[in-house]
Image 1 (cartoon, rainbow, N blue to C red):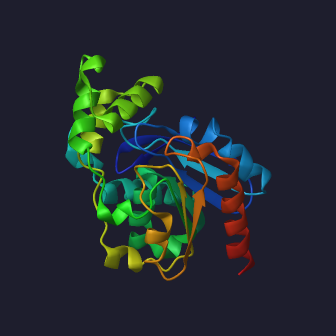
Image 2: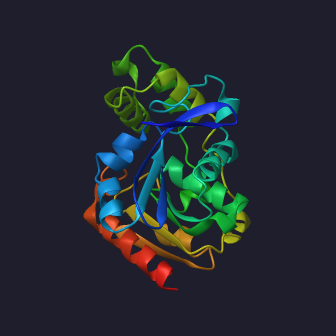
Amino acid sequence: MPQFHSDEVDLEYLDEGDGIPVLMIHGFASRMAVNWINTLWVKTVVQSGRRAIAFDNRGHGESRKFYDPSAYEAPMMAEDALRLLDHMKIEKAHCIGYSMGARITAFAAMRAPERFLSVTFGGLGENMILGIGGSDEIAQALEAENVAAITHPQAVAFRVFADQTKSDRKALAACIRASRQRITADEIGSVATPALVVVGEKDDISGSANGLATLMPNASAVTIPGKDHMSAVRDRTFKAEAQAFWDRVEAG
């Protein structure tokens, strides 16, 4: 995979297909391969006649790792995404983010709305503004030597996921301590870019899709029946709704 330099931070990325670009930003403790390749999102985007672009967020995958939480503030991570568009000389793209990637997408859309045809927030609904608890517990679980001693349910899930993705747990602990910054209702309300919010019905992390969508002037919401935070990302309904949304935006 090629790399680019975002303010001297080396980040690995992929670029496949042709047509209108779709920038994909993965979630916490994941990486582009896990979030977008293995779930067939890249294949779906390319087969739709679009250009699939994804990257490993700082602290994740093959990108550079940091161990100071100050290196993982969400606006800073949003700048990485915008710099990738600059690096590839892309003026405007669809953007889809999942979980932490949805929050990064929101910061990017607030920072540079002119760069996006649309934004899709997956796996993060109203809790983008209400906040998500458990960051300290998750960080401690990632740093723990004894997995059996972890009792917090979300912390256990993220520790297991981090181990499955063979992630740098110390870097992830620093990331989770900084990256869950809240966005106010007024701030998200300033996002006039066409937006789609998609969450699983059984997702106990995201909060309501409708609760977030109603705060934006040009947004719609989809709730996927029977899916939780980990399963919604690969769901066929999610892919179909995203493609239909992009089609509508491109049709004007």
